[in-house]
Amino acid sequence: MYEQFYDLDRRPFMSAPDPDFLYWSSSHSSAFTMLRYGIVSRAPITVITGDIGAGKTTLIRQLLNELPEELTVGLVSNMQAGRGELLEWVMMALDQEIDAPSYVALFRRFQDMVIQAYAEGRRVLLIFDEAQNLGVEALEELRMLSNINAERDELLQIVLVGQPQLRQLIERPELTQFSQRISADFDLQPLSKDDVANYIDRRLEAAGASWEIFARHTCELIHEATGGVPRLINILCDLCLVYSYAAERKIVDDDILREFLNMAKARGIYRRFSPVRPVASLVK
Figure 1 (cartoon, one colour):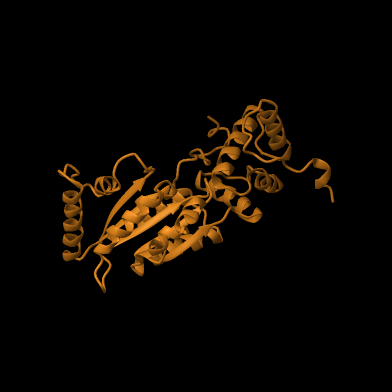
Figure 2 (tube, rainbow, N blue to C red):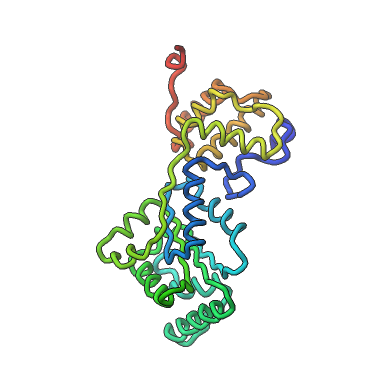
């Protein structure tokens, strides 16, 4: 819609996870380092948590791009308790048949597959996105699946990525045995004020921008309005570009941002954005 007006190759603030636009804040770098450490060290269970829209799924996509070939990977997304047996989701993610006559038979098929992969010099990695939806019983079942690991070798590794509720869930007393198998974990934090400005620049650069479309101080206000959550930054920046395009203004400055936020507030939409400082408070 506005790409030609800003001389962009593509929209810079799409909400869909895209490793091409990945910005390495210190928190994202640490989270990804922990993910890679968990894989390389053969940690039985790795846990990464972060708020909604913090960029967890983008990190998973980046990880999938870098995983060594000796890993057989199954990605389970958005599984919820009561929507099918966990083992069926696992087998489907691994491209295995699930038409077994019983749970025991399906487990035997899973176990044989993992052992066969190990015999071929491969390991099986299960990644669960939105893992806070699994619940106590599913996490305990995962612990039981991990019992397939040998004394000195990890045949099966599990990565859980989810919202902060996942960490609260794991801390429950009935999951003590599960938590004791976690060898790598990290809690992803929102972007700082400086990170937000660099994040916006990074995405614009990746989209082909040839000038500073967002004024530097506007980026500070965007940090205030979004709390540094990448998904909210994407939504707000995209809408500001549309609003600025409609006004035929090449630079998204403080006035454009405030005009849009006031319009949104007046119409009762986008209440997810926090109020920003009044103009008077900006004068030093």
